[in-house]
Length: 147
Ligand SMILES: [Zn+2]
Image (cartoon, rainbow, N blue to C red; front, side, top):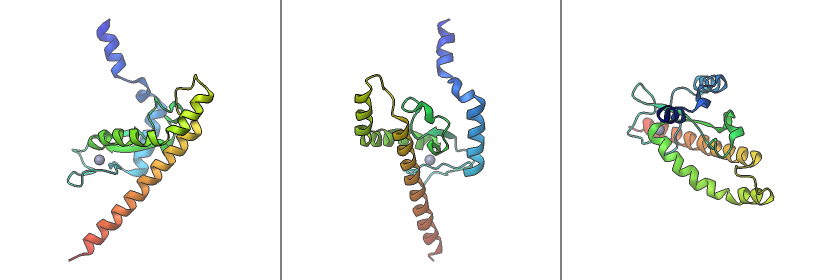
């Protein structure tokens, strides 16, 4: 019985829902099988057979359960970037803490980030990502043009 419980805990049923699988497929079709990590190690490939990609939530489900199926809240990461992102998100989550705390003071039962704050946070994170990828592409293009 104990073995069964441990195994069930490890396999989160959310990732087996049709809604998640469809969203995941649509996201990969739109963005391609490519790591979108901001701090991706340039010596490592972003795509290819050796790269294991994970579709991650910018704001974790434990903070924002309603954001589990929100497109803006998704990011495709290789395993190394996934680890780095967790650290970076924790830092920026602290920057948003005053919103978080204010809302939690108004409602002592509130243990998750309010929906609008979380969505705003996710949009900021995504914009940050898009800007960084754009800048990186410009730098790469310049480098390729050099003799
Ligand atoms: Zn990566």
